[in-house]
Image (cartoon, rainbow, N blue to C red; front, side, top):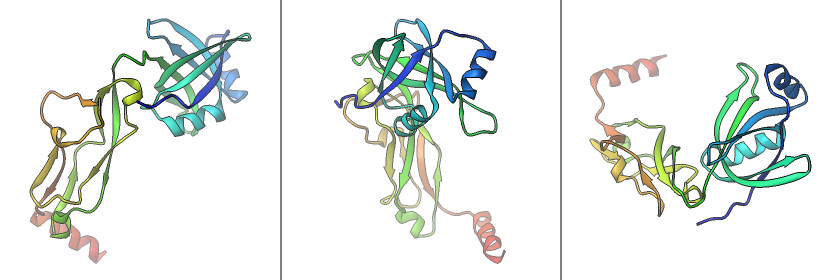
Length: 202
């Protein structure tokens, strides 16, 4: 099990409502809420740049420490980013929710899937079909991987990798009701070949 290396410092937020939150954003501050594992919620405000840096590094799958400054009294809590609201056309946060976790209790999180390599089947004229951009995994917070990497290099035509085929880190299991397909290499149809010819002609 790894340890928590990153800490984001935020301040307890006294003001509430749209007007107050709008003023925060003009000061490069992001309103948010820290939800404790017990179900309480504490309004907070975070500086935009440190928050953006933390989110870029940790995403929504990695635990970090949230240090809440309440008028000089500081408390530190292990958290995950739970929900993010973005401005509709500016690339900036409008609101963020932090979820407090118990490091000994398992959580369920949607984790991105990355496909690497070029399959033997594609080299032989097949086509790669990916069916999932993420997988729902269950583990203790510090065991949760940032992403799942699937190497498709050894896949031949008419082969499929299903959720039960995916090798996961120790202590991590996939949450699923049926053994769904994650990626396949299929034979090309006449339509595929015709479409490729048309693309090449263009």
